[in-house]
Length: 130
Picture (cartoon, rainbow, N blue to C red):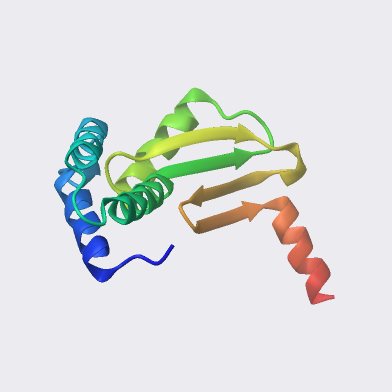
C-alpha cells in the first residue's frame, strides 16, 4: 500500500506525541490508535500502518539480545545491562540467550547493530583470511 506524505506526517506526529522522555509509552499508543479508529479521519488506515511501522522500529531499537556460550552470572548480566543502557539510552530491554555454537565470547545485537566478539566469529575470519 502506498502511503501519502500527509499520512506519514500524521503518523510521525502521533508517534512523537506517544513518547515520554524519549521512551514510547504503551498507554498513549493504545489511546491514540483507539481515537483514530473511533473518529476515522481521512487516510487513517495508512496513518495507522505507518504508525505501526514506527512502533516496530522503535521496539527493535530498544531491544538488545546478548548471546553467550555459557550462562552468565547475575553480576555480569546486571553490569552488561547497565553498560548497554548507558550506551543506548533508557528503556532498553536486554534478553540473555545461551548459544553453545559461539564456543566462547559474546554476541550482542541492539536493533540492527551487531557486536560480535565470539570465538566462532574469530575462527571464521581466520578461515576467510586463509
